[in-house]
Amino acid sequence: MLSTPQLALDLKGQILTPEDPDYDQARAVVYANYDHRPAVVVRAADAADVARIVTLARDTGTELAIRGGAHSPAGHGGSEGGIVLDISALKDLDIDAGARTAWAGAGLTAGEYTTTAAEHGLATGFGDAGSVGIGGITLSGGIGFLVRKHGMTIDDLLAAEIVTADGELLHVDAEHHPDLFWAIRGGGGNFGVATRLRLRLHEVGQVLGGMLFLPATPEVLTAFIAEAEAAPEELSTIANVMYAPPMPFIPAEHHGRLIILAMLVHAGDLEAGERALAPFRALATPLADMVRPMAYPEMYPPHDPGYRPLAIGRTLFTDSFELRDAETILERIKTSTAATAVTQLRVLGGAMARVPADATAFAHRGRGILGNVAAMFASPEELPVHEAWTTDLAMELSRGDASAYVGFLGDEGEARVRAAYPGATWDRLAEVKATYDPENVFRLNQNVPPVAPA
Image 1 (cartoon, rainbow, N blue to C red):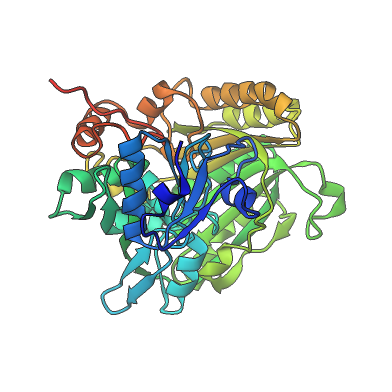
Image 2: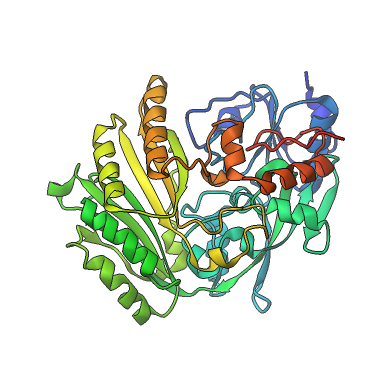
């Protein structure tokens, strides 16, 4: 058993045990599926704290979970009986507007970073939620509102400071530990704890962005995806097919009917953006049109920290979308017994696809569409039913292709992790893992075990 004196070790941060009043809040992750009770939660104050806790976990064999934004679909921000190392206090942000770069603490959320960068008319692309930690989303890839215009988050990662399994803080970039720099761009938390990230910034001032609500028919959904594929790279889209919630701006007669809730961002000239959006608005009479000129951070609405859904999801890639796929989605959503059933489609391409597949540990550069099938429900006992529903629909839409995006991957076993890192990517990651974490200290993640010694 770990003792508090063992943990203290000159720590500057806070140590929380089950007896502390803040313990339950500190151990909670976003998805209520997971209710782990760690022995302690350590809120690190700096990289030295991180190094001390990593060293202690390695020396004692204690399970170690790394918690940033706690958005892992597999609940990897929690541990049963181990140490949760919370890095969310690492929020320093130093922006060099002239060089268009930033050194950012890995505990920042995407919303915090984006709001500060916008004061300089700059942005780095992350995902579609402002509450995610930038450390987790960056190491997993980062596919969001700027992916077609500026690429993935890992394409803007210039350097990182990483605490490795031996407790050493390494500066990692293309010249220093290039094997590790390759691996952390998409390889997740397998190789250490990122404490700071050096990120490229792009000029992103006012965008044309927001939500567009359309009636969901097979024809409208198929045409939406076709328009998204044909759109200029400045436009990135996320289409969510679901039942309309009782939002006040959706006409009451459409509440509970199938809709396309589309989130769109055109990062370019506003007049060009209006021309790019016109085909989408012409697909059908919008139920609500909230797309407007806005500051980019407005795409990240306030987050309710008390929102902890029971949810299950399955990620997929596909390279085509036909009328029969749209029909399948709408038919299957009607059969779901979940409180909320949704299929999300993100058309890719553009800047993301121009990076060679072997340049980073993200190997799916040429894929056309990233999908995610999800269900939110009321009781844990419902999980098997909704897991089967999401898995079956995802496999049908992917036509049996098991490829996965690690950032959306749940607790699905080694075969699915291998599907996120196919072929030579897996082998190379396993070799890097053997160099920097041969004992697999960092195993609470979408784990790539170290290659066995010869």
